Length: 305
Ligand SMILES: [Zn+2]
Ligand SMILES: [Zn+2]
Ligand SMILES: [Zn+2]
Ligand SMILES: [Zn+2]
View 1: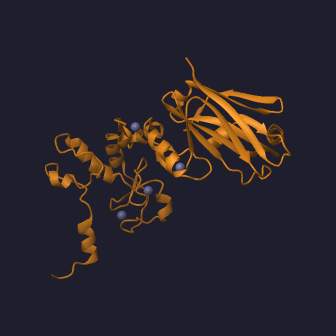
View 2: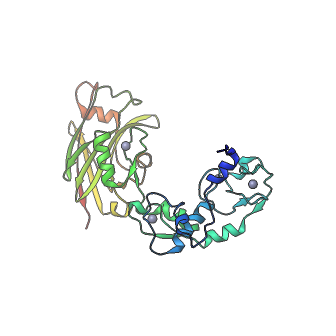
View 3: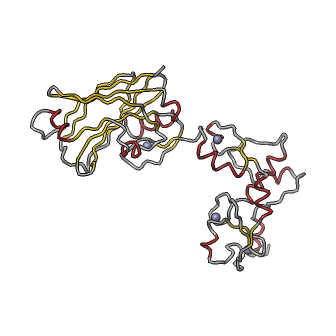
């Protein structure tokens, strides 16, 4: 056989974007592996999967939203990438100009697509232009790993995150709604390398994480302890918790509502929504020669009626 020119080869490998509706075999090309097969009915679902490819920006590969741009040859481009291609169509290298692709924008408006978290249980079918908004608030969207001491990028549902904390971060797990926890640190004057501590509690069929952290509040080194709820914001409000720390006849008590792990630990910490202990007070509670931090934090979680 004669060699096929790379250009021709390229063309041949390009997925066919406009499928004739009667050709079932072709229509499967654009479907993703993890999507359930849709052979039986609903031709509009398969058509929309090829329209979905049309709506993918060839540069950033994200879904395109108005204004969608096109070159004079009809190649499309998202408005985010347009300023970055220096007026050259990234597909054919012709001058890009300022042509808007209204037809594609209108086709997009007629589309309804499954939420991208359908693998996490969302059965929502959402109009194209409200899909991003839905997904940013979808109650099935995965949670970020709540471990604060590292920039962990793991996401998943709550059972997955709990297993991950146990297996990968070696976090202590406790059963029950009361706790009695000792924090010991040998060089309490070094705030910089203070370790974050996280403990997971399981009670009421739910999971909670107790954070303990040293940080600098203005000029003052402080410790903060707070509880977060491993679930959504609405359910978090059904619970309350209290924390107590003391020594030498003094005691600090905090009562609060656990924040959802949807709120980052940093956001909770920076709003001081927890038990804050000045370092001087913490060392006083610790007793001894102030060379070692030894705090006993007791607490309780309960369900509000
Ligand atoms: Zn783009
Ligand atoms: Zn072009
Ligand atoms: Zn959803
Ligand atoms: Zn993690």
